[in-house]
Amino acid sequence: MSAARKKKTNAEDYLRMYRQMVRIRAFEDRANQLYLSAKMPGLTHMYSGQEAVAVGICEALTETDKITSTHRGHGHCVAKGANFKEMFCELLGKEEGYCRGKGGSMHIADQSNGNLGANAIVGGSMGIATGAALSAKRLGTGDVAVCFFGDGATAQGLWYEVMNMAALWGLPVIYACENNGYSEYTKTDEIAAGSLTARAEAFGIEAHVVDGQDVLAVNDLTQKLVARARKGEGPFFIQLDTYRYHGHHVGDINREYYRSKDEEALWKSERDPIVNFGKWLVDQGISSSDDLDKVKSEIEADADAAVAYAEAAPYPDTREVDMHVYAPSAA
Image (cartoon, rainbow, N blue to C red; front, side, top):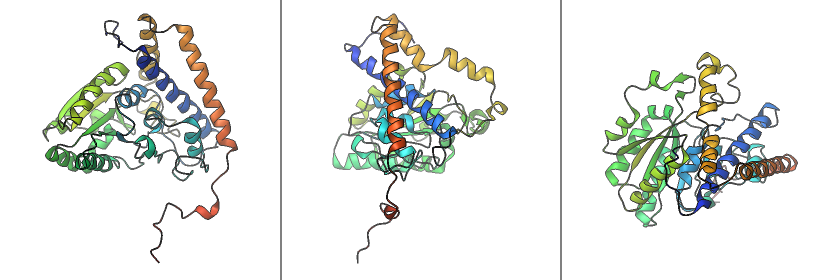
């Protein structure tokens, strides 16, 4: 984190971003524990290590701006305004979850916050985000859509189709590629020829690369692109270089076969987005170490209380098995 970076006029912006990153990390730690203790059905993919991406981008958006997420989507959901109780209820299949417990870890949506949903299909939300941007342009709402996806999704043909459409129609959409260096169990540079930015630029889309571990760098860039997208200057592509601390999914316990422990240790010790941002806040006199510790303690307590609440919450009534699955009959 650069000590030379100028402070914003409102230090609360920085502290809010710090809190949001800590919230994501606290949520993921408990989601991991719930899965390993066999309390969570289905599968889950951890976002830990990538917090600066979700927070840096979502802090540049309004409540009505739209996002679409991926199978590794808890961080995006929390950054866009999701609360712990409904998130944990959804992960545990409980009635009070965002999707009444029917979506689980990989299918959380909250349209009241502009979150159009996570998607277990690789690249599956690209069309949804582009459609939301088309809708915003046609309706003249001034809203922007952000599509989060991983580097592996750049191999999906859908991405090239939607980029072509977005570029032709000048849609207010930002394609945010979280390049964590691995497509499942394979290094990105072993499966992706050329640069990722060149793929967007081939459609005439302005492309940027940013340090995905630096929340301020992410936020600064996103604010500029969002403002331009609202004026009709989109679409844009951002490659956010980041790192996932866990394996591809929680059950991926053999990740030492495709990446080294030294590599993991380096990112965690020198490139952690929360630790480095916290140091910067203290160095700039925006906060003290004690105050940041209090923030962490408060959030840890909130997360524990939310888990306990979700564990005690009821499951959906079995009579709801078809609800929200099929359209009601016209008869």
